Length: 504
Image (tube, rainbow, N blue to C red; front, top):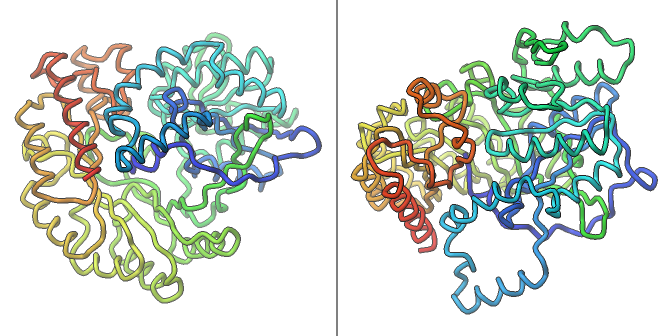
């Protein structure tokens, strides 16, 4: 999950020349990251690896593409000064109450403002569409940003009438029925996107392209009928996919310039996870639980490329489970230690896939943070959610991690169905015992494509309000053991606890 980097405040991007191809850049396909955090005065500026791979794949087919990040918040100068003064006065304590609590309290602002046509973010989106005049719009959508996705669709239909709109991302795979009921959406791409998007865009851009019904992995309309074509087979060898186009993302500056937004630390070394956690939709998105791994040689080539071209020395591995194959991790670490001793990196791993010897190897190879999903301090909850861990095992592994010297971040979730107040408090007390460097505490939300979503839907406990959920949203209560007010108070207390823990 790696929440921390996704919620970083607006970064000071280097002033680079505007993206220009003549006076206004023109592209065949414009990928859009819909605004979300911007409505609560934050930015999402990490590189979208999935979209970067799509841009590269389209490029190999002779199709030009760019990524418009509409979720970059440009903090007013006066606000930045106030934040700086506050941190000086409060010894570097953020202006907000704390990252988690502030986000939870401000999250309703997104739903209050997302359909406001006069919000400045929508003015920006319209400006970009008019400048670039793409031939296809493709929106990367998650469940949490569906309201924003649909507003982007409405702008496309008004500003660029007649051009095709493609929706991809997790929601296209896990919530397709809902999306196809929404006006203006022409195609969904579900499952793995590189081959499907390339084939679909080639078809849409070439008047004599073959029939849509032959393109695997898409959903579309034929009159009043929704057609779901057969799924596309996953790409067996990830090494065959070109590296993501790191120079394809941009944002709109106040001046009206389209400026590059370059983030070069993100790497994906594998796709998929074999485990069956009931709160996770990874298997539904990929259509498989079988993990596919890039070769060590292929990963190293990308690291060398990023070091050589951009001077990058720090990397984040965004694999769902970096430590899924021990031998591969050892091989990668040995190569990094030997050939790239100046590189540091962080990753996410299941706590039962690491051991003392492996941690020593990772540390020697430059690992500066490992993130693990603990989720709960209750054995009953760990069994309920399909985590296949025990509290005693976590305790033992925690000692090994601390002794390795690698800074350690844990992920926790509260508010699972049937979870009690005592079990939530037990989870927070468990953190004091484990003593990680950082903790990320989230509030349970039932994403489509997860076993919990299916269970709650069968029980009649899913309504439209679930769309407002996110990992920091304490206002939806699925426990069944507390009143809504009791859960909200407890959840806000737990989020504040996480803020205090990380601050200390």
